[in-house]
Image (cartoon, rainbow, N blue to C red; front, side, top):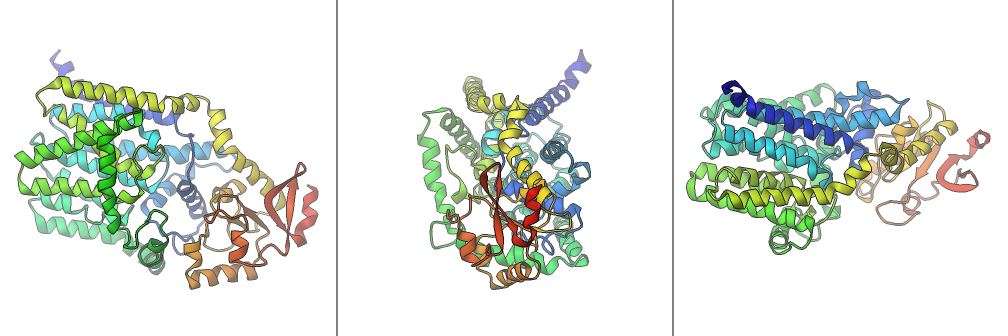
Length: 501
């Protein structure tokens, strides 16, 4: 009996990750996203030998690309549905690895139980915020909440800091930075908790300088700085669709006041009730730590506060599939399960947890209902592009390039074809850089793509916007008709004999 009691925290954790894994698998094919398509195609091209930044343009930081690339040996071009499943399940692997690493840092049953019950709740709402999609925001959210669970039990006195928690904190915070550069301040956390400051600083430096050294060896360093650093801050920030002020992204933190007021004053539907409870929990936890803990620990909590609000202007309260809110949702929902062991009146916290489960279930039920029909999911969200890819394969040769504009870059994967240059997508902010524009013009003139696909979701909402950027682009192309219907596919005129397939 004593043995069973000692094993109960581990059995509860095993149950929690089993529930999470099963529900993640069921929701793996639900919906897709523009940025996720970028990760899919970049990994596909990296598998063929292209180098990120040098041969594949991206102003995003590299960790999600390389994590996705790790799983490409399991992909199958002959079975796109298998590839999409593995593509998504690679994210599940990241969740589980982080969960395991955090859980093994716990010695106290409070930490173990709170963490396990939170994991059980997680699959009931993570699809509402694209937590099952391969997005940079999902990666950064996983790393931030892992740090939260690693260090909050130490702040509360449930756990003791150790070499393991310091090293793991450095890994999580560095991974968060190499996913989202605005999280550059997160390595301060393991530094605060460390008793060997100099060694910690050295380790932080070594871990974070290593990717740059690898880029230098492979000839990617200059392109990384040009795209990931210079382009982001000098160019993209001016075009950011969520930057509605003239002061830049850092000024947009003022959105916090507006959003926070909304969280605390709106509780009229399931989404609002859910967000109201978890935001109140986070505030209450902050108040308790501010009253009872030391200044360094309070400063640590403030770091978490800034980490989950760093992209506040991209957060839309009460909005479904708003992945910018996901880091905030993960950390604030964790707060309630921690509060359960702090507040003496268990009726309040138990009631809040029950309501949280109910509202999350009600909100997510339609998604999981559809997810139980894999054919529905794949047909709605993936097979149309697979059909387009099959058509493109019939019209082009393996050695020929195609051009896709603007959002549907997953067509490159489904068609098993490559772009004529290093640009997977082309937006007005890319076009604003004269050097980039010259590279694309050179590619279009020296090796005209065999086929051009133009979707109807371009950033300017005008069907001919790409032709405005590059006049006479389609002069030497003819529109392809399939089953008597005009498509968005344009074949080079000298290849028109292929239309008799």
